[in-house]
Image 1 (cartoon, helix red, strand yellow):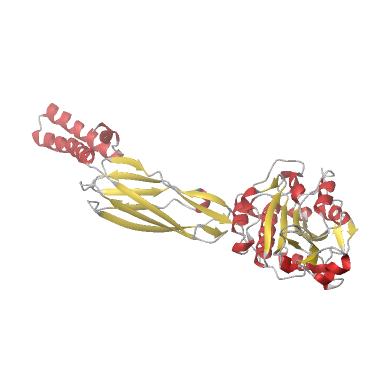
Image 2 (cartoon, rainbow, N blue to C red):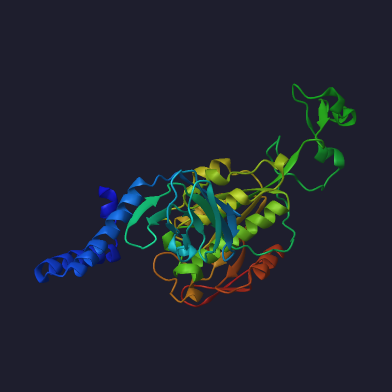
Length: 425
């Protein structure tokens, strides 16, 4: 009862105040009809409080988000199922779903006719123009009487997760050269420049099946050689994204960092569809949540996209080098912005005989000078032997990807002073 009275609304308090005033005036003025009106005004909130205090709810909520992972700008449907197993009927339920402001306004529902075995379904849509992982819920419930004199608050604790991944651009197939590594030998698969025997045989190891012995090569070399064309080969790729604050310009969806995330997501999705096992590496090292997927289950970039969905700018100044100890041959695609002088040795170690491609963000095009500490990425990458394509705000990623496939940087790359630096094609 005390809790119910504490939930008096403005209307309920007004009724009580008016009733008490009417009773006092009736006593002072000796007006019995006015006293009846005052008693009625006071009794209504009290009776409503008694009814709500005796009400027993056993509400349950089931929330389903479909799909659980959407692309930026794509809507998701949230379905709600409310049931009441309580024995006492009541009046109205005012429901308000707690959602982050990025997903839009908070949906509100008014439900009535609540009784034993009562069940209702409701649904609403959410969408976000920003990537991220958002918690939908909890839901707050306000129980009110039919007159709106009292209101009690309740809340469900359950929530649901919605992941908004960055947009991706469908990239065309371009020749990537030598990006294949054997899952058994962990070395680059060379192109067939010599005889087939030189490419498809290796030295015998204890435990190898004798049926795979290649006797002609064994006789020629004087030691047992086995065929290795039956070994499972995997195409491996590393997508490096520079997520340092000092490497980017701008803010919000149009910033250079968001362009870099879109480029990395597009490249990772494209390589995964082509059968590559893809891993994500940032300035702070390899992301364990997006480790290379198991090729036996087919190419899948979902985990990597989830990692990119929650990626934020990092305050690190130097690039982490710990992951380079496991940097085997394969395709490396880097998306970088402003580079520091200390980054050159790391980029040199990242480049290997497989293939190294880079999308260098043209930070001057984001409206703020790329001067200050560091300098444009393209000249540094070209000096380290990378294939480079420059990307600015609004540039077509398909064109940049095709340029990388042709094996060259643009004829001229602008430095922070506006002077062109010769590029290779």
